[in-house]
Length: 583
Image (cartoon, rainbow, N blue to C red; front, side):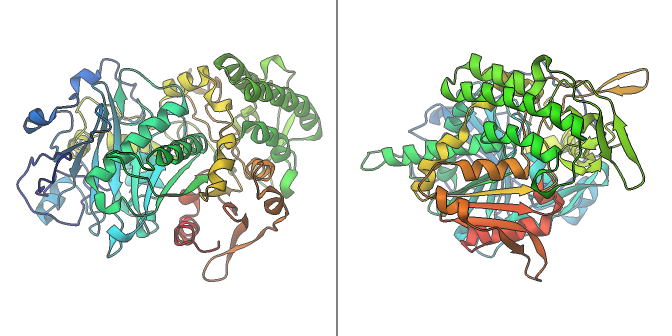
């Protein structure tokens, strides 16, 4: 991520109701600096229990603003909104490091665009952390605005910022970053938001437990963001994300659509959000079809080589049927009890017979047979030693190897962001402990059955209103779940698998739910042919189909995180999409 430093921009006080605080002396500059501190902490420290939102600064009244909130160290500006009295945004902008300063604190990452860090304050006891990177283009105020949300629930968008589509990429075991030439900031202004509370650097006393509450906070954030950056308020707005964002995004888009309608003729200080599209990568949106795709994905559907043998595939079918029955009950009666029960049945198998033996061809010369008593629909992949986010790769979850998330970069990000010097530059509290994913957040959402509610049911209205949707999926992704931290006993790794925080996000399930979606274009979309997604050099990078406002893209040789696995293809995809061009 852009290494955010003490701000050097002098703020000009705008007219009320916007309120700003100038905290520094300096000059405006369009460059940002990436820095690395000397001290490093371990990547898997436990969440600091004793940190209270009260140790942060509550929302301040306009008469108090000159004091400045201590929670965001080096704060440059606080933004309030009359329509959202319990919300405010605090931001700081990165400085331009001199050559001497860079030698002391790190390396220049991206000197072509401004980057901000900050918080959305919700009342006195909730703060959502964010990064905002302006477009690298010559005219960022003319470029679209993208809000990026990570999955989980409970995973930080810093992963997207530092290992997928942000302006910098983590490297050197978390000791430094390099400029990401395939960053989506080549095309757009992008906000990376840690949501909900207790995700990444976000903090609060009362945790959220459903995507509707998350959507309400997102809407308030957008309005406050436009107060700070009014020059972007008319630009095309897109909500993008991956994994559990497949649930967040339809909820947020629906809130925006209905709030926009309420503003027609209303006397309000809020602005209409120019929402143009939703972009979901390897998302979970319709559990009925996506859980149902487990069998096809593992047993040779979609032209894939089977991962399971015939006996295992036969045993899996009744398990899927039972799961889908529970999901249907949740759809009809979306109570916490019905939906959390569905989540439990689908992820735990709830006493179903073992699925065994399993057969996996790890390499042409090393087939493996595993006898497995399964406790989760995802267990075949985990026990076979595969990376569930890219099943073409194996995964050794030891911290000295790939780590519990199967990507070393995730461990590096935690090391990097937990350095005291980096936290100081970001403006977060010195005692804050960064975790890529917080399993406690998932548990709250699972208890309410949020994952099993049909977010796809919100999409037809959005499509009919002209809001476009892009579903892009890597062909190698099986799962998108948050993996609990490992336990060690006698020198060996024991991976506990409680209920899975994210369900099936593979390309088969994503195509099935988009085809099954009932809207005016359903028949034509279903009949639309898949055609090649080609790079400018003619290389075929995937398959896509589209009809009016619905588009599906399958990216070859990519896993759960397409921008990480196929960065050039992902940038080409988003460039065409934001330009309104055909994929």
